[in-house]
Image 1 (cartoon, rainbow, N blue to C red):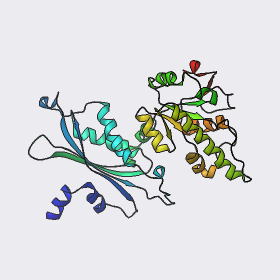
Image 2 (image 1 turned 90 degrees about the vertical axis):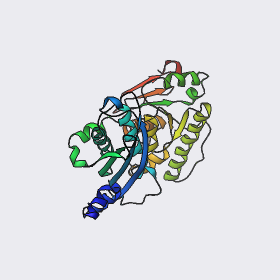
Image 3 (image 1 turned 30 degrees about the vertical axis):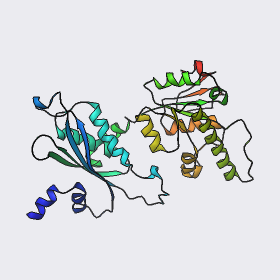
Image 4 (image 1 turned 135 degrees about the vertical axis):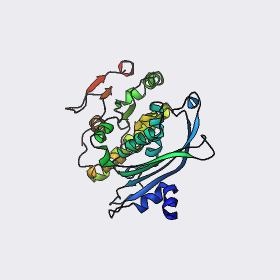
Length: 308
């Protein structure tokens, strides 16, 4: 009995270990994450904030290939804290049970997550901590798993020609872009200067991609609100936090089935491929010819003034 009581009040990581199946899983954990928020069903809890503490464990499928120290190949801790922040911001809730269910569901929409333990405690409602703990698996979600996945942001991808990057109205245009409710990701092509030539196709492909990334930094240098971003994890975080990104393509392109599925055409074709990967709501091409057939809506603009 003593061991059972100890286990009941131990951190969810210990409970995860004790209740583990024969199937090997890795675990990530969040300990003592304290947020001050208005929550509670009693009248005394309305109009005031209180501290609540989150302890969460997520069991994930082990990664079988080399990690290469790559944030896109693991379930990021940011996903767990973002799930908490999202559900707290969505609406005021009365019950910790409701909040725990919603946080668990949002975590389990991540492809790597298989099971999660969510413990939430109120720290200011008495001499001790009052809380709930739930355990949920992916199969508990059923059809809601697909529905939740549809909530991911659908950005507007905007390709800027070198003439558009150099326009004097760029800062004003970014002001308008930032005021939009639609997240934006900017794409660019190579610089106007000649790139080195390599005798091998794969080497030349890397040089061409690095040339695009150099130009991305040129754009970022013109306005500090434009952040150069390379990974899908960073892109998702930036979109959720209202940050304007400039896509650095090397990482995603070279990781995509060894590059076999990516286009061998120009930079606009690459921006179109990227739009498909991000399930973008549209690709806007500024100052360059439109690509061929597309899965996403595509439109053009001659310059920045007519772009939005």
